[in-house]
Length: 347
Image (tube, rainbow, N blue to C red; front, top):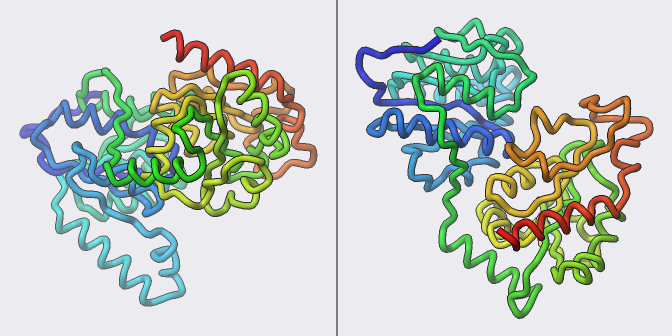
């Protein structure tokens, strides 16, 4: 299926609210749309925690923040219901010609429908019956990588297949803030590795004591100092690693700037891991219950390490034994880190 338009769309909306890794995976679609329709105004509906990835982006005309938690109270809070109605009215007033739902859920397809756009495109297998509210559906399965699924939508809109770009816009202020934080913790501008011991699911977390055991070998084998990063929710974990702790001290834009300059990133399956992969940084991505083929660092399978055990991938948020990451030893992680750094230095 390839859609044709009598006149090129002038106002386009991408719906991809969250999470950080998912928004990163959708960035190539933005670039392809811009090349397909260079004069169009492209807006992006996104959750506030992910908005910094898009604010100031040269290909984005408007970032529309969707506060899911506030609007989600509408079923019992009349004020939230009124706010949601106003938000939907605001979408209609923008008179979008084309709405692209890359989230594929009932609430995202409902937002698409609320725009009253004449063309609303999404996945044929959108969950929670979301596919019913699209005017056009793209046939796909859940097996390909998320980026490949998103590209099917772009191809249905007549976009060229590539090149694919994961474009970030980092302000000078964010870079200066990140440099200042590094200067406070790593005097002398030494090359550094960034460790991310956190993840949204407990089952995705490699034991924090294993992260802690990397600090000495990274310095001795690779000449890298170590900093630990993450969100506020990761501060306690990060504090158990004997290295400068920046967890909870950076916003998302500063975190991107921190990763830009990293000589190595070692991370669980998490948003920062996907940012590091998209930035092309040397990376070790630790995978447990999830499938890197579907949601791993796109085009960077050489950076993935996991254990081949019968019960994975299980996609379980709770596990009685957690063996898929508890059994992953330190030495294989260090060997992959050495390989990633060596390739970067040789290239």
